[in-house]
Length: 275
Image 1 (tube, rainbow, N blue to C red):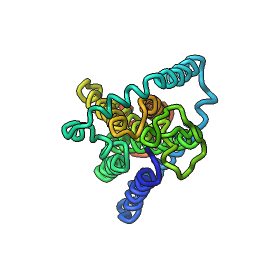
Image 2 (tube, helix red, strand yellow):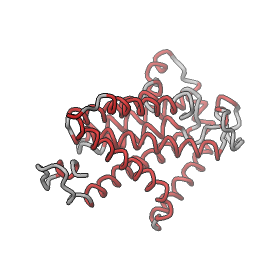
Image 3 (spheres, rainbow, N blue to C red):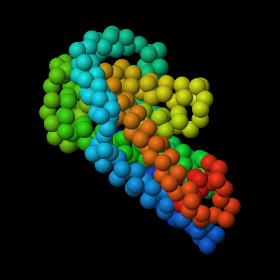
């Protein structure tokens, strides 16, 4: 899940990486600082747009929302069966296979996205910088959304009791009642969605979505979540990641006429560098 043991350190990691940008700043790095400030503004814009997005839902959006809620509720019927299968196949080999949640969907993912952003910023690669920025935005936003839902819903984790339909909302510090949705799964799918859309390559996309899927399976295998928890987490993560990518593409298109750099062109790279 995304709690103070893994989400807060992840945010601190991102902030520390940003702080390094200012610590290394001098008269020759003004353009880097300017890019960073514009990226920070972009991050706030994406966050604000995410908050108000439900107010702008179309009929199809509400149908999708209803389908996700309905799908989650339907999976309640097989939660205990899937848990029984997972617990009945605990082996040393499977322990190694289903270990993805140890390094993906947690604080390490934040370090990865922040590092990617830093590499792009200091190397002058707008593509890598944008990718790192959008992945970091997806991580933070999806983590916050999931954290709020966890506390509001208050579903008990499978290791805390055999009854899968047991809720105790607003347990802010009790991890046992923060199962729905799965935080690891949400973050993994949010970041993977951003990464997957970076290249139009089936192997690239399969890798990232496969990694996110393995995180979801790992959470079930480790008895941390019911299958319905990871389903909802995957849905939230995917749509947050997709929204972040779509918002930034639309925002870049609107600002394509703002020429900060003298060598701005009308191609895609030029648009990414316009602020």
